[in-house]
Length: 120
Image (cartoon, rainbow, N blue to C red):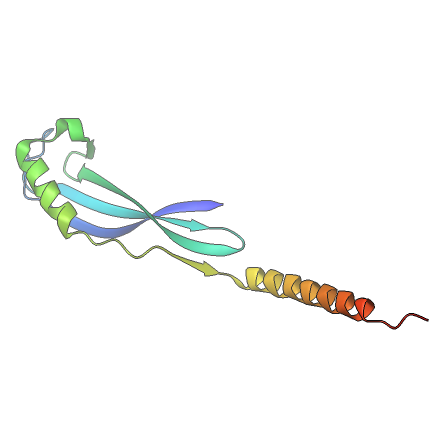
């Protein structure tokens, strides 16, 4: 099973970086989990957020956030709309479903045929 995090939204923040104090390097990223197997592709409800400073190449963890960053993060989180969770079956899954259906239907037909077979 292959799990990826796809970026849904990126926002440049104008707050001071807690590490380098630069005002134009912070970037807030919203990601959503994407799962792919040999039978299906799925977008899940799981989301993740991260703040990264492009100036000093540092991940800014929540314990390092200032009140201004927390306020902007709360606003952006309310404005963030994740993609709807969905699952798409691949051709291999549809083939498996079709084969199972054929076996079940043929089993039912054979059972009905042998049930009503005249006894000699």
